Length: 198
Image (cartoon, rainbow, N blue to C red):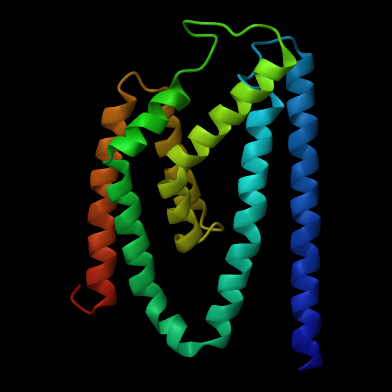
């Protein structure tokens, strides 16, 4: 019992150190990029701040769910079905007008066809708005990562590619819908497999 508790404390301690180190590296990297004099990121640090808050909320939630799953065998048996349902919902979300609206806001960044006044308040508000739209836009795909496993490099690569292509491709809305159709199919497959049909 004491060794299990010590292992948990060690795991959480190492995770916290890695999280803090990753955050520090990201901040240093972003600072060095802005010092290079290239094109500034729309919204500047505000957009980075929104994603940090989203990550800080998702990380402890994922840890809590994993801990509950380990303690409750019935819940652990229901996880494959729940994963399939979450993937199915995430795919369906890609097909909605809500997703299209947030994606359009995400894609409509200054620097392409328009510029913002050089005012800190305007930049802060724009960054917050952009960060919120982008986090809403990516919510379904990020949910897939949370249920499939954020440590699965293949899943991370696929979700990153999907987010990048729908954000940067000329026909981003069509890409989002195509991604949604594939994800719906994957969700149905996972549900069928969890039900013993596949």
